Amino acid sequence: MLPFEKFIKGRMSEKRFIHSVNVAKTARWLALKYGENEEKALIAGILHDITKEWKVREHLEFLHRKNIGITKYEYASKKLYHSITGSCLLKSYFKIDDCDVLNAVRFHTTARPGMSNLEKIVYVADFISDDRSFSGVDRLRALAALNLDSAVFAGLIETIKELVHDNSIIHPNTFNAYNEYIFKNNAIIFKMGKSNWFMSDCKFLCK
Ligand code: DGI
Ligand code: FE
Ligand code: FE
Image (cartoon, rainbow, N blue to C red; front, side, top):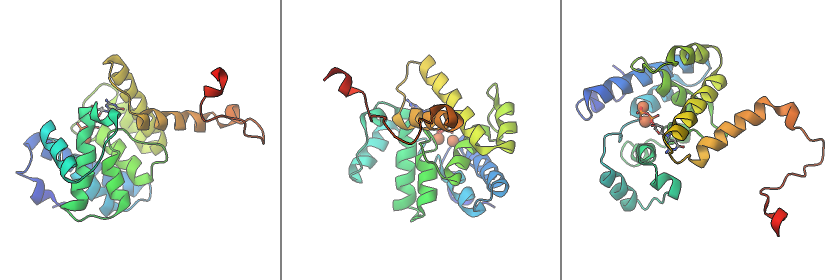
């Protein structure tokens, strides 16, 4: 029996329960492979979608009650709500105060730049768990077994393609995570010598 398995069974649909257990097991496998804490991977994995089946109103009321603000990108992207309320629930109801576990749940939808190994593990496990069957999932599973970062990057590319296809809002965390990988992969191309002349934006061009 996995941690919280008994608790979540019956509190969510059978489909979501099976997915949660699968993500937990895949996260444990990745944790073992990449030298992360297996218990944390199991807990973050099994609870990552704990509020997924809440209604929009329930998410918004919960956030209001807890006095948690969200950005306009988050407000406009209903599919992201459960990662925000989920991580808050882990803290307030489940009394989990491990930041890494909380962040793994918080960023399992969008990812973000500077993710920890545990965050990457839960992000990837959610993509490749046994119940996933989208085209390309086997390639992603193979990639995850070889290199965690490559699997995160591939996941980001899939997500961004789908978001663009659907004319959906791209959360800054999603594209900043993607850009982080592009910069890393092209470290030599982008290296501009010792002086750092990059501006944070390009407003100076039209002042
Ligand atoms: O196991 P699930 O909860 O079904 O899967 P998930 O939590 O990975 O689903 C995340 C959803 O969030 C998925 O439909 C893609 C969406 N998403 C990820 N990044 C962004 C996003 N949606 C918007 N609008 N913008 C993003 O940047
Ligand atoms: Fe989710
Ligand atoms: Fe999920």
